[in-house]
Length: 455
Image 1 (cartoon, rainbow, N blue to C red):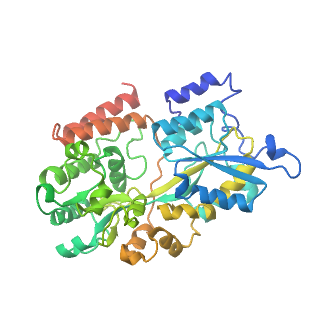
Image 2 (image 1 turned 30 degrees about the vertical axis):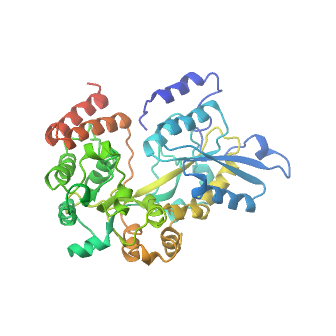
Image 3 (image 1 turned 60 degrees about the vertical axis):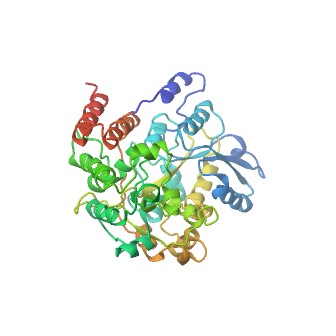
């Protein structure tokens, strides 16, 4: 695959001489090899693994590890948490480069995983998969893995579900049904109809969570319903910002904020540090484009007392013909083995268990298993909690979260971090009214092409 450069990963080349090679076995043969340390020790020795992830220990990982450790006295696992932000990911990568014990680690963005693979930090799994007879397609689906250099480097532990939560009381008040499939035009009609009041008493029809700001993240999800994988890149290596889908999305956001006044203006949202889930649960927002992580807040009636029912709709499509109906829904929690781990075979044994039945304790926190054999009724019950009908429209939840849709799997990540910054900057200029959408996407195209084409 095309190499991707980043300053931290360039450090790998410098450290190679001191660290006996940064790549370990990462880009070599994919068959499992012998390892040193406790794994190859004598009878009765205990292998100790360190498993790095970003989910707080109390939200399921501790219970998962405890479950494994009780059943497997010969392979004991310790969970090490890092925060999934830039500093947290730098902490993980520094540990990998420095040779600290990291046997398994979870990646939360495909572009970061791709860079780690390029830096030789990730062990190919194909040999382990073949030797153990682990059927990836049967367990996770035919298209669950993006291969790099025709090799498998990860297994996805969860499906990250995106959806729109809707306050059913407000829907009923406006005489609107729960949308089962809709376009952004229909979404805007709903947002206008659900907006009510003025000033401090105003109820907003829409909040897309782009106001923290997460302009790139939600643009990315929206345009991919229409454009599918690798939406930001053309085959000739240039950027794709001249595709009408990008201007269309910013026109929609501008219309929601400035014309319909159905969504909080970004400047106000940033100045007052608005949080979408808090607004939604205090009846200040009628519809909220978010994801399964929000469910733990909706269930938390101690901190967020409310008595309305939350219904669910899929993310809107850009056009009637959009075929990637999942929006931001897709595989996540890309679970990998460190190429420099001394306990790879033990790590693979734990990993097989974790990505299938093992991560069940994380479900209650909103992490829907990618494992196809998970009991959907049990998953729904664990996520929604006891007496779910008191807070949720269970039928619409199952319809959206367990929908059989084609997930988008990107394969191109060239200069993605810089492109993300460009989108954030130019997108904010659109939303504050400083720049017309047409000029903003033209600037995105010009700036991104300079990066991608070097011109």
